[in-house]
Image (cartoon, rainbow, N blue to C red; front, side):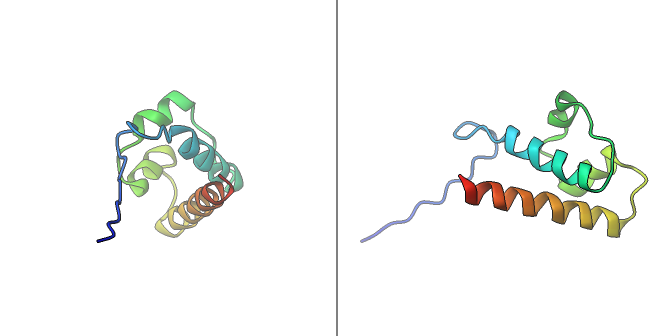
Length: 84
């Protein structure tokens, strides 16, 4: 019998993914002309839902703007993953 394994690494024990998230958020924020927070501050927000993270970083955005920013973030992350 052939088995498949799906592994979720949510706490960075197998893959340290903070750098990929930071690059993706920085890309999306820059593209949307939003001030990029300091790396250490951004890392403290990791683990919460993306929408909530964006609300903290850029509290003046409406839901459509948050969705646009998250689409930019996800596109960058997808392309980054494909390049690896």
